[in-house]
Length: 263
Image: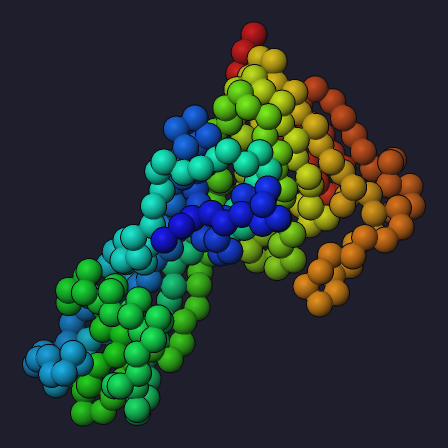
């Protein structure tokens, strides 16, 4: 499964909602963040018939035992990636653990699609810990699935090449407030197109770094129509909301903190 796709033949875009904790341009690799689901325990009289787990008494979902990695069941290539494109959309997904519930659901025994195959892969990878559908005097299956988001700092380790980044537009406060970005410079020229919806960002400066910030989304009225960003007029007195000092850049609600790694 590929981590990145290319848009307009020039922009690298991570798979939407893929949890990434680190991007390393020096060794062409990515580290995945946490995307887990609660495990099960207990149950009695377990047998298997027709690839369906049967019980006398149902197992229970527990938040008190280690959760299960979904990504381990998928098989995602995270090394030897192609970073030759110089423009990249930053990841848009915080780490999460899925909480879930089961309920009586008839007619699911014969259901098979990409979703059920993924659930079966998780079940097979963690024997005795994930019964997403089972029989206990009635057919049961997942009926509720809810992500619980965690604070996630995405580290971007830069090389000396010129790199251009686009901050994603995330309108959901619950998701955006869990995300932050940390850039480690390496003496190159880098640009960052800021979003109209601010995301916490800090930059660890290396000697000879040159940073360029595109603030167009910050100084214009922004609306979203049918999933498309529409830019309007310049915001009145917006320039008065820009504050620059040696350790911090503030543009409206967006703050970028700088840290120097050299003397």
